[in-house]
Image (cartoon, rainbow, N blue to C red; front, side, top):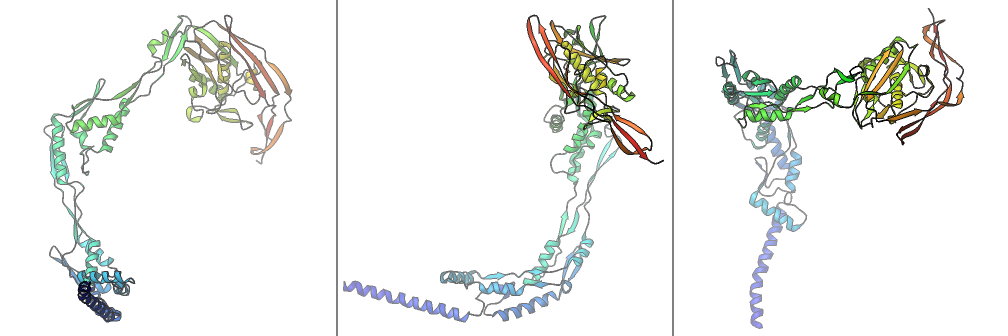
Length: 582
């Protein structure tokens, strides 16, 4: 036990002594460097060890000021360029970097401070102050002097390159030069901070967009297409991608493929205009003498070039990854009804007729009635299909050929494009009623229109307004239905031809209730009309609730039993009275 205590005492004394000496050494170190920079502290190339902050500031101020008042010389191609730093308005944040350098190794926690100081003693530390300089004018002058634009390589064609007599020559490109202002700025700052004197002006070499290597590759590419060109084939036509054509779609400035995708797509777009055609549905008429359907506008299949797929095929062919003869991928869309098949569709008799009169219509209205009739005339409706009046005639406007005539719009009778179109939808509605076909969508007019009651009771009308208000019916006969629409004197006819399945349509008389007289007439001043002129723009009409029923039977079977209701508003006469002085 006593021996153990002696050994412990023998070894504890040196450890204690070392500890005490280390603490004394650390304390002495802290006292010596209390207001001085620690060993191996640098700002730029300046050693500030043992200096106080003011001493370091004065030393750096003198050194930096001396450098920023001088000049630097750079050489390029045996030419010397001088940069005058005295005009740079240099701002060096010396105080900020001095404070930052002084704080190194002075952390609050003792263990962190010791570690930081040991790192400083072993590795040292160098700080770089933030510097702002303005040498833009001098840099710009140097840049303009050394600048040399890159020159693209060129393909020069002589003769007709589609023949062997043609020649393709390559004019080599040249590299350009450009001052690297960022690197030059860094070199100037490094000189101010570290005193490193640069000598070579930092100049970047600029490659041309079209390199000589790319031009030579394109030359070989064009020459190879002389003997084995890519050929595009569709039906009885063909188009050859000979050197003349390829020259216009080359991508000489790109880094990857020789073919410019956008240029090739433009070429294919032009090609598609020669190939593409919309599908045309035939228009037909029924010859009652021969009991056959004849065509007055033949059907035509639609064609559309697949541009994206064609691009891929051409690219592969040009890379020798597939055959050079390419059958163009063209999508064919067949018409719903081919002209040659029309007489096998069961169109053999009249199954319904609609009639209406338009006596008293202004010329523009008569024109619109005839135009609309021509657009529904000859239309074939397949079995099971729903016919849309609006979809068939399309947009109703001046752009599609319609003239201005009176229409009901926003509670007024006004002149607008397409006045009279409802004469056709009304007449078609009557034909559908008589044929016993299902009515899908029908809307009555806002008020009773005199044209539709010339020889007919009220309620047998159907208004349309593209694209929201439509008239639709369904062909449920099991055979195609042909529409024939035409005018004769002041009468419009719409005939429906098909195959009768024996259905009979019975339409009741119209029942009129709640008749109301027109409101008193309204006279409005119009400054656009000459004084003393009176112009009627709306006409009186009685209001009423009108209904009629329809029953469609086939043998003993009831197919349709429905009632159509129309609620017409009473309508006043409106006159415009001119107030414009002559």
